[in-house]
Figure 1: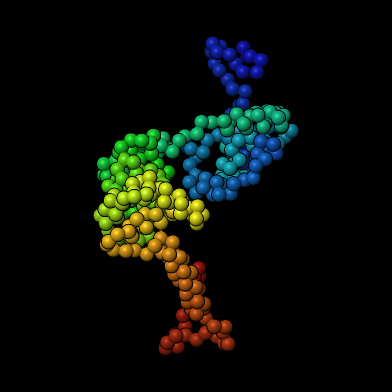
Figure 2 (figure 1 turned 180 degrees about the vertical axis):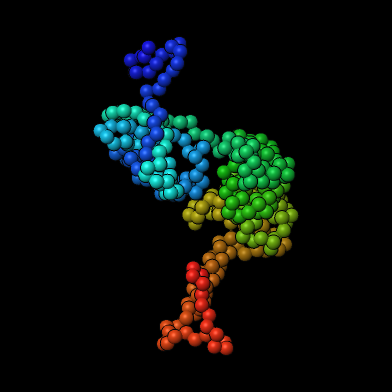
Length: 322
């Protein structure tokens, strides 16, 4: 027995879907002009192709209509299969509807994509449980500091910032993350374990490296008095810097931290934005130098045949060598 929406009602034994699971040739699949009106995300296709796992790719949903098969959901996955090298006559299982109208295709797309997103904390914990290297190492670093990654903020020893921790780990390395977490912990305690504070201090650690010791940074941050004192003072100073410069917030936190470090007695380091400007000039000079070196290394236009280097012996390059 079915209801007025064409769906089976409970208590009827075997429950069947309206869509049927059919094996569909890859070459016959084309995007629905209605349900797949958005532009193909090539970066997403490249990511799926690079990490292709047929056990995880899921089952696309299509509409068979007028001798053609339109993709309702799964366009990027289909394109990843093509890019990976599967042939047009290779068949893949698809949940197949028959003769849906364009309105029904669009409605089906909306319902299929009305899913509950998985929050960053849940993804992180599952990745740790699965033994993924990045998340597992981050979890180790945080726990070794007597802290833990938490689902909510406000815990004295909890960091509610898995996305920030992953970003620091991937862009600046495990050592920088380890130092930044411990500096914030020792300088500000639980109140400082915010994503933006950890990221800002990580910038400082990454930029200045071993030029400044962690204990010195901690002592300067922890003992700062006045308007810039404590983590709230640091963030207020960073917000002022951001209004003045328009720079990203994490860089402004780094700039504020460097200003605090340079107050009073003790070793002084180059101010944040001056350091960044110098680093940019150095990078540009190095890039120019490398370009010039590459230009110098190119052989001059040949006036005649290139002669053997020594002893009259002829050298031949192997095919494919370059």
